[in-house]
Image 1 (cartoon, rainbow, N blue to C red):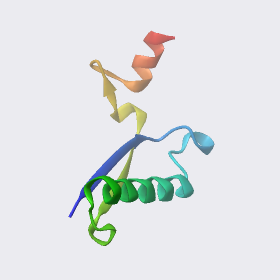
Image 2: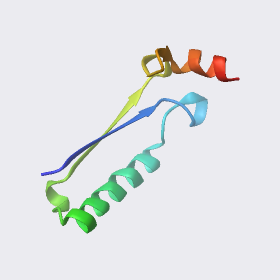
Image 3: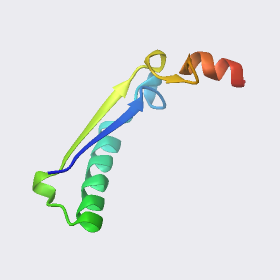
Length: 73
């Protein structure tokens, strides 16, 4: 019974939102198909969860994403 957790930042979509419902559905379908193809896992018992994380809650190198991006620009 595979469990896959995908974490993405809330950005890139309309008004800074995360991925659209259609994009999430595509990710869920694609990951499920990949596990079936590569590991022969049953899609009926494959779980995929997508978590959206605010940019200020995601860190890189000791900095939040907004702070990190300010330094890189």
